[in-house]
Length: 311
Image (tube, rainbow, N blue to C red; front, side, top):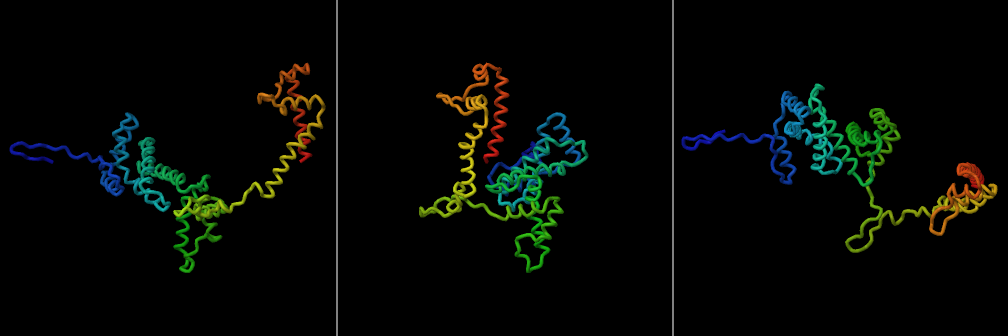
């Protein structure tokens, strides 16, 4: 491009094709900008990847990243159904893209787009699992697989169902078996994930309403487990073991063993410190510290057996 002024001709440098628009806080402007960025030819991609790998050329890394930003936008649209901001999904996908560029090997014979796709999805998956709900729904590999496939598979089942059956939200037994077989997971895991994904989050202790009245939430009617009969029985048994049980177990020991256990574990000094050490007891009984330890171990085994019988 040139501008002619009188007899002089001034050449203008072409605009930088890799420059994004300034940050405007507008997602549509960003998407429009990345879709205008030029794509790299296979030769250009190979050259840039080798420059990054061999010379740590950051400009080459930038060209690889910028030419694939539209791929991140395209992949992120597949995850809009989880209720998370599209901009955040794109941001996390861009992180995955940069990780892929850093690890890309141009000598493997594949294009960067095929390699980066897995890294982009992995980063978006991780973000969704961390932020989709207050209570996390996916932990194991099988649960993650179900989390990202169950919803689309259920929609496919609905599309194949009769018109009279389209309002059904739960999976049938046959559909559960199909999901389990296709994803190579247990049918119990399919049923558990469907239950967890279909339920919404409920605040246990909701905030007061605008008129100052305390909202009624599950915290108001949840049972106090401390007064549950089973918990009360267990608590009583622990108290009995800590008093009568310990006394009964000590009585089963000979005098020296009982004194050693009491001095080591049941006595507390005035300053709050524990009982006597092995060496202190060894000096009292005129034996080695190792002998005191052996007596203590034998006494503890006998007490455990006595406590088991008492319980």
